[in-house]
Image 1: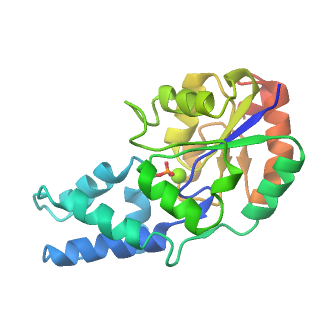
Image 2 (image 1 turned 180 degrees about the vertical axis):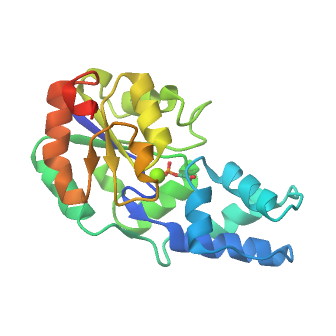
Length: 225
Ligand SMILES: O=C(O)COP(=O)(O)O
Ligand SMILES: [Mg+2]
């Protein structure tokens, strides 16, 4: 059975904070609200755009208007790849995994349309057998159903898969699905988010960690520190 590597997107495959930050600050400015620092925005990311905006408006003690979500998405979709790039080493690792026989998929809480636009703009779409966005299925990470639906769409199965992500939602979704997780330490999540999952310090560490995680399985020794 061909193994499947399921990647989170923001903070794992791509460094997307600059464009999310810029679009969010344009939205806040249009509502006459103060913008945020890059650090603030990193803390807001991980649970999808509706939650990002809820956190932003709550931080300014402001009420979110009904147009905020469509306005943000229209702006972000038009500007998703201005500064956003794959993290250094990611394209090479995708090549390496593909050559080693891995099938690849993306499971992201970013809305599917925005995720597709971004992957297309970066020339990465063709690498993935499936893309499960934050609005593709009835639920999203940390619900394991999001990961399982993405895996199924990719033609993979949980007994031969590994999830790679930078947020506790990624580790939690993997655990719930019975899939081993590898924590992307170069991303936006705090170190504690790994919650005992083995951590890759840089993308180049992934091939060996994925092989070990697959061999050990979800309950195996490599998933427990
Ligand atoms: O859009 C978000 O909040 C996070 O997206 P991710 O799941 O790709 O990290
Ligand atoms: Mg992420």
